Image 1 (cartoon, rainbow, N blue to C red):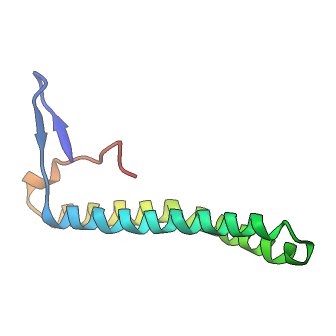
Image 2 (cartoon, one colour):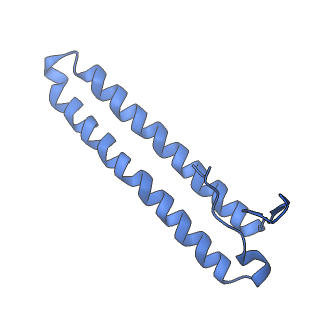
Image 3 (tube, helix red, strand yellow):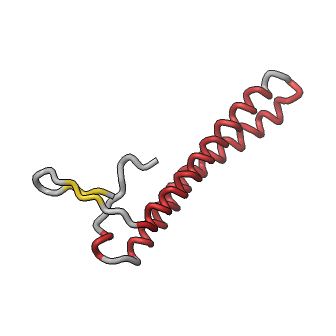
Length: 102
């Protein structure tokens, strides 16, 4: 979203749609991270009782699937933003991905 120019000047470009898309995907990513933590915490607690071990194993599997979903969310965001950029003028196309994106 920012671009460095010779002399250290920094140019920042924000598109309303891009900001909205980034916020939504960031919220989705945060919700996914919370679910990952919950699956693993619940699964760990279930391992304290032998009768709950199988259910705990399923919680660990669900958490592992959530870990796979995490990069898929990032990829979907990237594709969505690139498609949105392709649809706007050349002035917005110069924006770049931030290294600090979630």
